[in-house]
Amino acid sequence: MGFLRLFRRPKSPKKNKAKALARHNDHFQFPSYTGPDQTRRLDDKVLRLIFQYVCLHCADESLEPSEESGYEGCMTCDTRDLAHCALTSRQWYSVAAGLLYKSVRIDAVHYCELEEVYAEQRRRKSRNGDEMDAPARRLQQLCRTVRENVHVGARVRFLKLPYMTRESCKADLARTVSVCPNLEYVDLPEGFYNGDPSCHTLRQELQARCPRIRKMRYNEGSEQALETLLHGYWQELRIIDFNGIQIEPTTLRRAFGVLPWLSEVSFSNIAWMNDSFFHSVPSVPDFPAVDTLKLNKIHGVSADGLVHYLANPVSRDALRKLRIKDCSQLPVASLHLVLQSATSLSSLEYIATVSNSLPIDPIPPMASRSLRKLNYEIVANATSQMYSPSTSYYQYLTNSLMSNSLPALRQLYVRDPDFPESLTLAPPVRPFADAPPSQGFSQPLEVFSKGLDELEWIFTSIMPADGYGRRGSMSGGRPLSSYSASKGLGPQWGGDARRSVVVPNGFGGFLAIPADNERPRSAGNLSPTAGFGHSHSQSLSGLGGPPRASWMPSHQKRSSRADLWR
Image 1 (cartoon, rainbow, N blue to C red):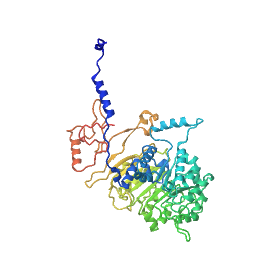
Image 2: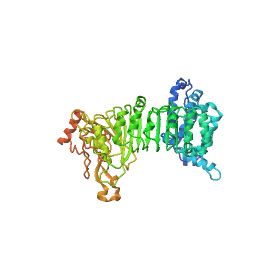
Image 3: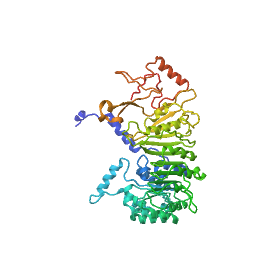
Image 4: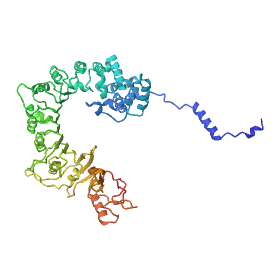
């Protein structure tokens, strides 16, 4: 046996070292902190701010449905993490529990990789092959919690649910809101806004138990529910939407009279509404002074009605946002009358579909010293014409901007992808006969443009011309060439939507097409020693010329051969 020991393989020193290290780690304990808890020194305000970052939607106080008020990440997992924070200590519970039940949100799925794991577990636990309805189960658990603890129910202010959950769990929703006296907003089923008898119990509970509701909507069929406002329900309403209701104007004005906190009113598809609705009538409350007014397909209201409403100083000073969409009696030619009367207006959204161009007769420019945001979306419905009728409308907008009639405007949304270029190339002319001498485009402007076949807004920053006579600059956006693939390759290549992209070089020109086996170079800087391109870039930088484009790397010189081709 002693002889055979000589033939045994010697143990590797690396393996012996690894085993020794593992044995050492098993017996070694990292030092733990045994001093006082430093988190106790944190103020409740600091803890509340930290917990809001743990669960972002717990601070959501918007009066928007669940589909329009989502956040990045998995909101269900964020709620779980905040619940774990509440169980850490008594101090953390007092702060985290208030946030946990302030804005309650129930989602149908996990917006993370855990959804696959939980979906498989639910399929295994389901009976008869039917999967468990997870959001309905969570609503039942919330109902049990708030009904067993009245203090928790008093903390609930916002309750947001998936669409199918609020449509199929009306009874559970009614039992939940009945013990939430401070509820301000809740996602309700569509039948609630149409006067559906299946939502009668839910309406009774909401009217009797939740007097602090802030937002409500009334569609066609809910006229009787609208008249209940005269009985004193929901006097803290801030936002009301009306869609296709058939009710006496006097009754509606009296309902407005019992809502002192009303700040936003929206009207849509109401045939009987006209200018007389804004007139003052004895023994009838006036139309309230609101912060936001929205008109959608209201064909009886004209600019005269809005001017009459804004003649009241209280209404004129209160109105900040105005939205006009597809109102035939409110054409573009009458916008200058509305802006002239709305002296406190900061946001205007005008959406219209036009079939004819503007008249040849001169129209006063859109003028406002308070307007900061303008949505000017003009879409032509006659696509067979050689020249789109929307061109005259955007030319009218360009003339209004170049005449310095909108000096406070900072954001502009248009449905013309070529509008940013036309704005920088437009000369400062005197477009109107009764307008003062033109001063040109004099303020920085953020332009968001979008074509008919585009889904996202394209941002372009425009800087005005300076006092040295240099034309304004433009950065961002995506200028397009006039060549269309359909002209040379046929309509099957995408039509006008398939265009080649040309990238600007920062000096008013565009990048040159690169040759074979050669890096691209700027059209204005063909070589570092070329006289025009190099000297022109130095003169612009010395005189404080336009800023470099947002996509240009900061470490590259303008006169270098930068690889910027896209």
